[in-house]
Image 1 (cartoon, one colour):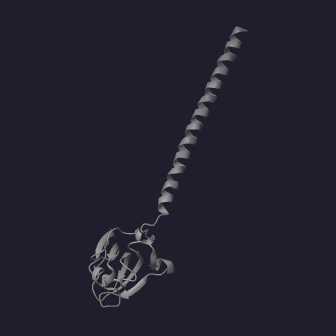
Image 2 (image 1 turned 90 degrees about the vertical axis):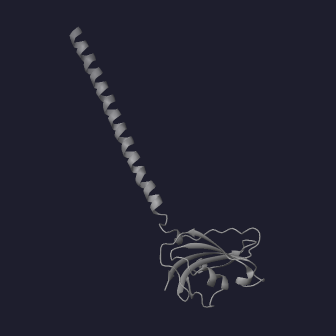
Image 3 (image 1 turned 30 degrees about the vertical axis):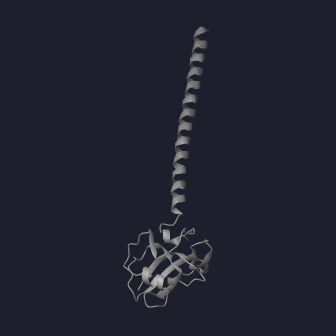
Amino acid sequence: MTDRTGSKSKGLALAVAGGVLVLAVLAGIFFLVQSRDEEPATTQASATQPANPLEVEPEMKPGTGTVDKIVITEIVPGTGAVVQKGQTITVNYKVISYKTGELIDSSWDGGQPFSAQIGVGQLIPGWDQAVPGQKVGSRIQLDVPADLAYGPSKGDLRFVVDILDAK
């Protein structure tokens, strides 16, 4: 009888050990599969963000002090052709009061870019002076004094201009 009891105990111990081993392997596979499932979600989340920053409407803040001359700040460097006077530019833009930050106008509101000839007097002098020489694909901030914009009634202005095309 002792041999049978010992064999049963040994068999039971091996069965329990085998069960624990199977559970450990299954748990390992579960965690491995779960961690792989999380990776594409992270990739997908970043894939939903636009690859081109010019596809996102800019956020703007008012300036400080006064604007005595045009100040051009490159926000996103362009890699396209250099804009020349006389070309027709296509842009998205947003303009706020330099002092208060109040929104004055935005092509983003209409959902369509704006097109006009640059450097020939169709636009405010601040744009005619600042945009030629910039590259297509750039986003620039223009701080423009009132006398090179719409005059004292509108005051100094801050624009963000996305240069989409120039022909």
